Amino acid sequence: MAQQTEKQAERRKITRFPINEEVYDTKTFKSLGYTADLNPYGMMLVSTDQFKTGEETRISIDIPDGKNKKIKTFLTAQCRWSERHLNTAFFNSGFRFIYSSNFDIEFIETLFFGLTEQ
Image (cartoon, rainbow, N blue to C red; front, side, top):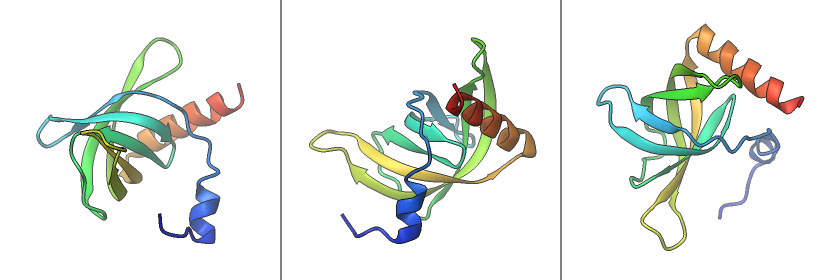
């Protein structure tokens, strides 16, 4: 694995939650896979497809609100890396959220920062 820069190493300290939710492409309504972890700034996606680094995808995720309900979010995610998961048919891909509505940003931040304090 390539040597991490100081900025990359710092970003890895962000709390991640093992939230397992299905992710959909909003253009095709096709399932892209499932989140392995999620934070207010991005996610790791487990998928049968490998994504191209730098590729942007418009996605939808139903994120739990902590009250047995889910809120549908619409985000643009940019693939930062994608690699095969060991010797399986799956790929792990890291995505950064680069665009979302103000509502989606506030909802995700409130959810995650609330979970962090629990």
